[in-house]
Amino acid sequence: MKLFIKHHISFIILFIFVFIGLGFIIESLGGIENNFKYFIFLGFFQLLIFLIIRYLNNYRIYNILSSEPKELEDILLDNPRSVLEEEFSRNQRECFKLFNNKIRELENIQKEYKIFIDQNIHQMKTPLSVISMISQNNRENGDFKKLLTQVNSLDYYLSQTLSFLRLSDIAKDIQIEKINLRVLIVEIINELRDFFILNSIYPSINMDESIFIFTDRKQIKNVIYQIVTNGIKYGKKNSKLDFRVENKTEDTVLNITNEGIGITPSDKDRIFDIFYTGDNGRIYGESSGVGLYIVKKTLDLLSHNIMVKSIPNGKTTFSIYF
Amino acid sequence: MYKIMIIEDDISIAENLKSYIEKYNYEVFIVKEFKNIIDEFNRYKPDLILLDVNLPVYDGFFWCREIRNVSNLPIIFISARAGDLEQIYAMDNGADDYIVKPFSLDIVIAKINANIRRAYGSYSNLNKERILKLKDLTLYCESFLLRNRDREVRLTKKEVELLSLFIENYPRVISREDLLRTLWDDEIFVEENTLNVNITRIRKRLAEVDLEFLIESVRGVGYRLVEVE
Image (cartoon, rainbow over all chains, first blue to last red):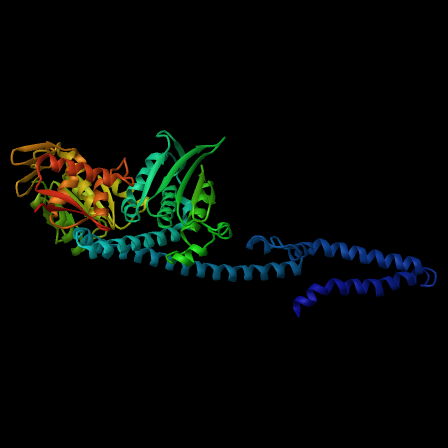
């Protein structure tokens, strides 16, 4: 009520001026009959002055209300001039505070989740190491060998969960350095030795020893590791996984090609979407739809492009443009 | 014999590491008292330390710094944390190497050997030649020789590795995967016919010295050494 009166006080003043003040003036000038046009002119003039003042006092509210806010801060109004602006600004500030508190609360919950999952995964790695060691110590026993395969795939999923958790933090600690691409690929292949052998896939590297790329070592390793893992997983027995470098005008392009089930054209555009598993995921199970999402996100952050060419039941090539 | 001290509070990991490392001619000691590791260190005087990061009382980084005050020996960290930060922090605190859990035991041994070699020079006097015997057949693993009574043949490194696998596991079948894993080299990876080529070669070597054993293929599984009747 108070705000309403404060906001409309100018209307009341205008009203008094037009009907009473103006009435007196006209009266003293010789009555309404003789000055009707003048009366109208003065009336409109006062209205105009009134509107201009009002507009100047409040136009920022109209601006804020009619524009679409892009950031949360856009709804705030600084240095209010009129009563209405003051109240509007105060109100928005309170809303802003509420939103912010809510967001902070959710962020905290998310942070706690992250810390909890992160810690627990690291905890899980200890018993996993024990199982892995016992299995490695008893490799000649077929059952333990199978166990080792399962342990390795469990470790893969745990590591993938960790990379997913850290995805939002990658941007903060990217370190660009000069990396020998061949050395990096040899390192990845050797880490995946058992997986290659188990699936009867054979790596072959066709690239110069002196090809260097500028990127974040750890992140690009994760990316290539993921693509190679997929290449082995969906490859045909006794086929090759081929690593080849192409030099296009400005980019160094790494092509990783496998021969296997391939990707259908309808799936191709969506393989980088999160949780998208496509036909292959449905047929082969085992797919979480997260690996390639992490690949794409990471490459976006590193500003490298990725392209896919695939023939179903034929060759599939992932190309990374450095 | 070089002495290795394991500082790891998970007893299963420590015990498994111990039993594996001992196979490679090292003496292993597991720390059980985490309050004063320096005392244990002085009592045992190890040549190399495997150190976990998360320990009761103080963490591994702390002990690494403490040990560095009294000794220069190689220290290898073992941790579940694979982050760059942890690894850099470990190195900054005086570590020589860092292994991430879960680890491959082959890699643990390789890193121990490499660090021992770097710190104390060649380990040729440490590793007496590994000699494998099967009846009259003798395989000298370091001098790459295969002998049967008075007949002798020189082998390549790969042939020794494969043949020792067969002799050690006689008369069990060795799976294709295990053979390929043995043949896998860090630089030259295996190919489709790598195994066939190598098996053919060993068969030839065996035939050169002896006719009592031959390598038989077991369909769909792998190969085994059998005695000729």
